[in-house]
Image (cartoon, rainbow, N blue to C red; front, side):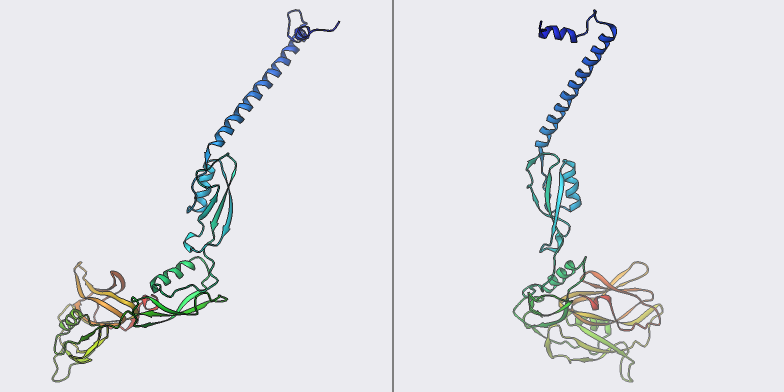
Length: 356
């Protein structure tokens, strides 16, 4: 006779009538299948929970972040980066994310990839367009372009002409924009000095003590170069004895006046007389030059301050011995020397003379 389902079920379920070994075997079988069932339920539950969490993972905004920061942001959300690098027009974007897919705000599953396009910086294979731009801007751009790589473009000869364009504007370049670069290329620039400068009438400084002569020239915004010689028989020491061009002549604003003075015959004890001479670059526009005397006890005195076209500086001084003479360009220190006796300060070219 065929057994019913309940008969077979009773044969599987342990019974007090079973042999002890058979009963133990049945219990083990039941325990095994119960554990298997619980493990299956737990695994399925975990999978469903994780699947639901992945659906809520939002892609962060990574554009303009560094590759490292972008990778860490993805890992925090259980996402994986897939990186592609390419050159970009802006050298400042080097090693930064410039685009991403999927875009920020997209909900995707954990473990998925997010495609990142990372800039390798600018690839410079042609001469840029510099005409119409400030020479200061062009120099800054070239410094940024080649800050981390071999330089292929450098600024060569720069000539300045009067024009209707603002001072410092590039009027022409050679080679022209778009020229292909094979080796290092030197670009010559023609730069505007602005409109034709006004003419100023030179004041007379002959017969003045040298410090008063400096003050008068500064007040009239006239750049100067001093030379010193011993006084003649009928000349007063420490005074201006000649100037070129002479007083009353009208010259272009920014033109230099050469002033000759006699050496002071008597210098008080503890004082030092000298001539500070520096070679400067020719500036595209006038900059503020300031010469300051700083004593050992912290006293500070401005010897002169004026808008200056550059090229050269030669100014007399008489200060306490061991005073620091500090030259500033637009508030930034560019030269410092200690006044000592005897004073022998040769003309020199400071670091900026070969730079901007």
